[in-house]
Length: 209
Length: 196
Image (cartoon, rainbow over all chains, first blue to last red; front, side):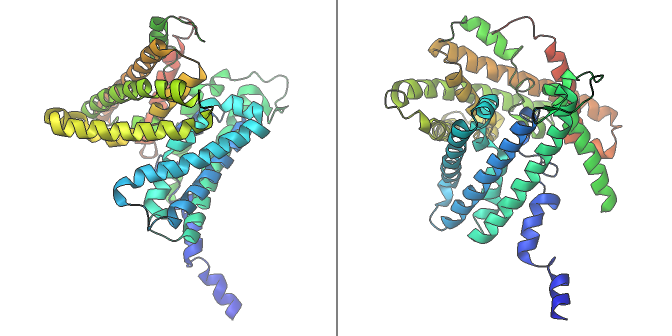
């Protein structure tokens, strides 16, 4: 009996709700249209998408954690500046880490690593969640959003790299007869693909409601 | 140091290297604020003003303070603080001395701090080793290019609203992405004209 009880109540628990909120209901990209720039610009290669997803997740988690820990100390008037300083610190860590251990990826992403600072997801989570709730829940919320966001990046790269370059993570996957769709590797392809994804997802979401 | 003619950089940053449609930056306001033509114009004006101003402030800070002190690692932090402070300052000045301007683009100023193109311009300026004159033309050109893109987008969306026969799942951001894709295709046509 007690085991049965935990099974049914897991969905009611707050930590579960918080964790899955960002992955589906409140998905940062599809529902709130945040953080689009980086998701479009760097998803033409799978390794860039993975690095970006990991970077954003890392910065969101630690940004939220520290905003949440400092929430009683940060004065309301300058909270935006405080978020930015905290976030920028972790973005610098990410940038240095990529430069040191993955120089080719760092070179390919160029300024987009630095632009994680202005990714609205980070600010959004800090303002909407971390400033009000405790550190434990804030970290879960950040993980949920980070994972949800990374999933979309991977989904985009999964279409763009094989069809645009004929490769996946640098390995040739398409048969020789395949002609690369160069358009998918540059900006217009990214716009069309995200447009189509949004269309499919919104239609599906409406049906399940 | 990049030795391109500042005028060429200006034109290139508007057309061949348009920051919205080639580098895909500044998308959040591009989608949200392009609902009406009027607000797009206000946002565009505010962006031109802030982007040029912050780039002009960040250039000496980077080359005259951070580089001699070997603290380039702090660039992100310093840039974003300068941007946030500048925006706040401009907002206060406008509120105090130019109330009519406040009504037209004052409300867009707080949003600009998190607009990626402001930071992106400062980062690109460092990455490409622009000198001061090049930075001025690059930042104003980039901002003008972005404003042009959002104004065109708003105009298209207003006309589209008149037809109003879009599948329900595609409404809002979905159709904006498709239009942006078509606009980006058109901008590829400029690609060969100027090479940086």
